[in-house]
Length: 235
Ligand code: SAH
Image (cartoon, rainbow, N blue to C red; front, side):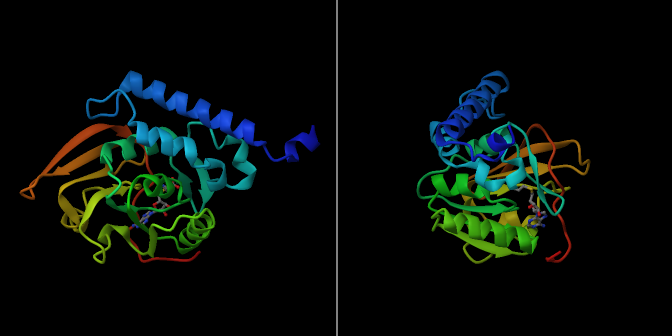
């Protein structure tokens, strides 16, 4: 019914949809693992996904699909990442309540919120000014106070606030931007999709040891939008 379609989903429906999404994610991870030998999602990541309302990060006309395990368009040729990938990338960072995190590619801000639930501080960099502005307004209205927003080319990272305990890159690069490696603290972890083919990249986990030496591991194939290398814009 048209009337029903307009009705905002009630809380119980949203909670049930989010619980079903979490089950799908947990099931996938039980089958395929997270790439680092684990087949169980970190319970803290589970809690964060259960808590953050993904429906508030997608365009209103797509709210009915907010709890499907798939990426969705958010405008400007960009997408909100697939929930499973958000969960796995966050899991791989092994965040502590004291962690300081750099995120490249704010997009809708959904991944940013998940990081902000688990870490002490998140610095997030977005190249599309309009997306950054929307994400900032949304996350501030939701009460997040531990996120710093930056507009610019995230391949340069954010020298102010570096080094970071963890770095998450949400767009694919041909190789690891050297500035990001420099800004990773010894003992820290970085996840990034690497590859030039828009339909097939590898998710790579970089671990920097206490002596500052980095080890890279290719985990599994992913498909992300490319990391843009031009100057910031405001289409
Ligand atoms: N994780 C986010 C967005 C993923 S899409 C979400 O789930 O909503 C990747 C984002 O990276 C897009 O918003 C895109 O504009 C941004 N991006 C692309 N190149 C970038 C760059 N060089 N620096 C910062 N952000 C970039």
